[in-house]
Image (cartoon, rainbow, N blue to C red; front, side, top):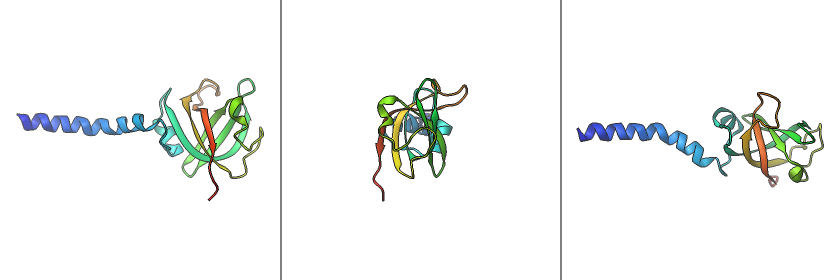
Length: 128
């Protein structure tokens, strides 16, 4: 009887660990963009690294930068207070400079149905 309980508990833990690892790792652990797109839920804090391949104006005067890594692309809402961190003007890419972006996964300032990252921190990464 105890072994079947232990087996059930082990199975439950094995099923929960990936979900806990994702939730626990989102606050600062850099994830591939494809993983963020597949697993992030509203309000999650996520971190990605990539280059800016395009930018545009979103709701109001917010800058929306499209970040790309080797796995995909994601829109990032860049508030006025962080625009100076990017080497980019509206409508252009950032010339290959890599950045780390941390922010909340949401769609408030995006087009309807478009999800992305609302940047809370942007840092320039050293060039290799």
